[in-house]
Length: 317
Image: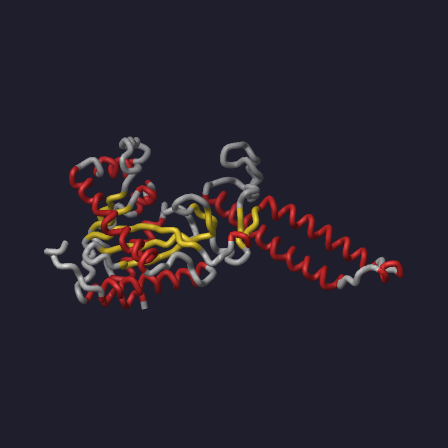
């Protein structure tokens, strides 16, 4: 349905695919922060529950006449309740450990490599004690929210066309970082509309030498910030990071500066509408696949609003 709406917008001239801007926004998951547990707490809770279960089993085996005068206790029910809690915690711990193993494989760490400080302070596949998993929506991740603090959230991505601020691609990930998402968004644009835009704008969160290299021959001009706005321009070694160095040089030209200045005007208004006009700040569904569908539904609703809303006249603008 989302793709059909985007293609219809293209047919009636609301989408031009000249310039698009890609942006990400964190949206809270349908997951209570009180239903999360850190890895360190999981290890302690598992040990405590195992000890409680063992004590209850011994008590059940050693029941005698003296226990008849004690308050009645449903030992099988108490054991079952603790076993269910133990199983849930064990599954959450295993998810954290698998996530840690996958991350270390991606960084190129050898499983047999011992701890040596830096990024590898712990044994292979052992998360930090503060790493968390949520019991209500395990696919969500703890992410920093605007204004401070952390929530179980998802990272919602949009690609917005310059012509009428129509969202032409909407994807979602449970990684807090935007790095690596630019190829995914451009691929989604091509899948939805059959071609790439002439130009794509993105902030410094999307900067990555590997991404620039992968997209170099696509025919889509990239204008991606390589540093924070208002900060001194960064310098990159052309030998080690030739594509990033070339991007930094482009952003020092008048054309590059003019192109990048349009990014905020194109990319950020739709996210503002979604959160402040539609009031969508938290997902209703749980699980990555379901939340991805919900995000496309929200973006489709916004496209319809933009299509039906009266456009301001040039004089009023």
